[in-house]
Image (tube, rainbow, N blue to C red; front, top):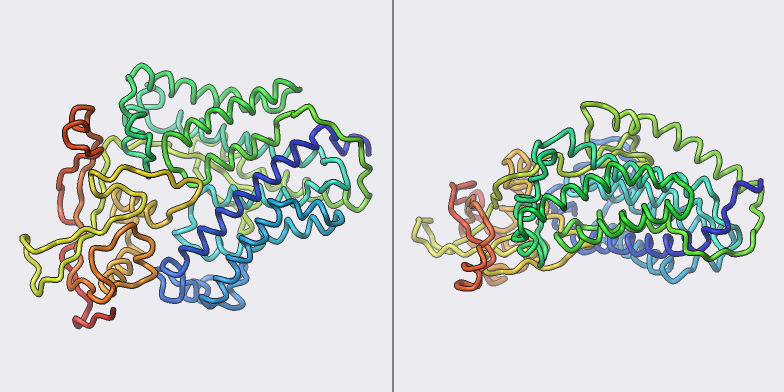
Length: 472
């Protein structure tokens, strides 16, 4: 079938595949370095407890068959190795079926992690990586020209990501319609970056222009992805520029980066290789998969036009077709939960309370935010949600406090700094709620602090291990 392949997208496939492999690497690296404290055997939400309660059909994962921390570590680091092999182009050195199987490996491996990750893996970019990664299996390698239908499905993903985000904003917070949301967003976003303070202090008319440009990019430009070239390239390029702007303004794990990766697949690089006939079995497999994905797209497509549009929802346990969107509402005030410990026998207001410092979330007002994305600091992100509502803390916050009281090594590795030596855990830990705001230019010059914080209330009273039994 002559229409099946698109030789002009040979370079688009190459760029997309290598960039996607980098996203896989960050995802597996995040899992390998953080899992013990989050979902390990002694984690805050242990995998063994989860798989004992949730059947395989609802959350397919290899960890239903076996789990140990050592096995998970080998699994995650193997995922890193496979990702590096794909970055290096090993799939291109294999026969077509071998390259497809190699791309299937990281998808199966990461699906197994996401499906037991619980709250820590409930973000939209997890499903986005899996949906995009599944399509990558069927893009082929140098033996065949890229299949056009797979590129169309990648455009469909990009359309849903951008258009869905645009619709959720227009249907949500009134500040998006008034063009005022960015008066607050740079200050109240989950994890500010090193430039977020400066973005916040841009003139308000500039913020209005930012919001208007965002609406244009998310509500108008996505339609142009399906136009002939070079219009589709121009539309994808505009999306890439917008996503890079978001990369500069905050830390959103790999959400912006994988959106850029998908947009790269729509760019015509002007490089064409001679047509390579696709074997019949390959055409049958790709078209069958495409037909299945189109059928599954009914629910996310219906969600787009629904007045009750939901964000970041998976409609099947394999995360094959999902719905996306972010920041339908924007917080006007920033609240942060600050954890502190003391060695005093009896906790008092004037005790020597020492603050735990997180890597990414605001804490010490003088600590300037760092750039972490596309790496994902999962605990820091969940702590932002806790500041919005204590309901987000219900399943794991108590376990976090318990592990701080134990000076648990794996938990402390998730932090930037613990105020207690390894052999001397705190006797009590407490949590306090503060309101944070960016300092003004004058305050920054006078104090060197990028944040100013005000005590609001106690979030958790001084707490010690039951029975006062502590383990270093």
